[in-house]
Image (cartoon, rainbow, N blue to C red):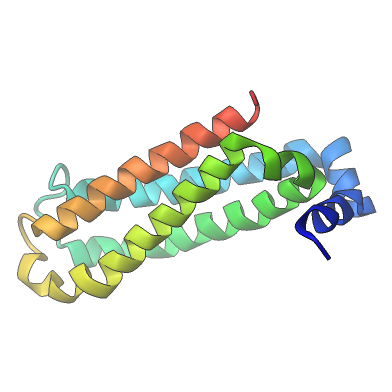
Length: 160
């Protein structure tokens, strides 16, 4: 099955059509926005700490332990609601440059997070209090950049 035929099949499912054409779309779109708000709010707090702009007196590990569960809740809400929204307009979304940019930025944000966890986080004991390492600052700055890009691209989907 080709990608185009899969997208057509997905968009043609009765449940997907009921989401995109019915009163469920605003509900799932609202869930998506709430999920993104929780996700981006929690990530933003940690990124600002990594940039040493806020919470300088708080350990990065303590802040991370408090915030990461909220990040996963927001991520879960955003993914599930996003997939349901996507299903109803799969062919349109897949061809949208704004949607493609959003997906690319999500991948970059994920790669940045993975690199941070694999390499930078290993040395957190050295910079847990006070100014984070240059690697942590770069990761925090890139994270903010990528996630702001995700939001911008997501808003552009409605206009393309």
